Amino acid sequence: MSKTKYVTHLCPSCGREAKMEIVGTMDGDGHKVWYRCTRCHHSSMFDSAVPKKQDTVLKLIKDECISYSPEKIYTVGQSIYHTDWDDMGRVTAKEKTSNGGFAIVVAFEKSGARRLIENLQAEA
Image (cartoon, one colour):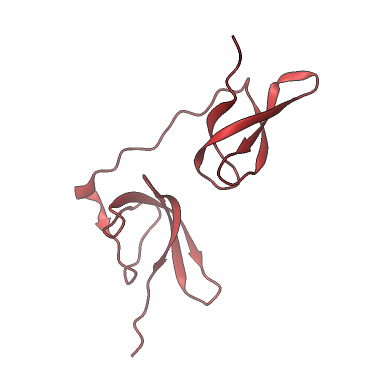
């Protein structure tokens, strides 16, 4: 029986769970395998002897999420519902943008990690 040519793994480059193509093994160590992401084509080496982390993402409940608005201020760990995308996510980080504004990084269930504007001041 032959080994499968693809595995699903978290790509360290694009940050998404993607189908990874097996492109080779490390000489002398059959546990270290080179994979190429089918989305961003970034190559990475993974140790197949190390067990994969269990999915620790908690399922979000729509009623417990705050509706996203660029004018609001959010905290890390808050649950957000984006009405335009019909997607829920959790705030994982806060950043200051190059133009002096503020952004949050949200890990959405369907869309993956996205940067969204926060604390947008309306110009008078």
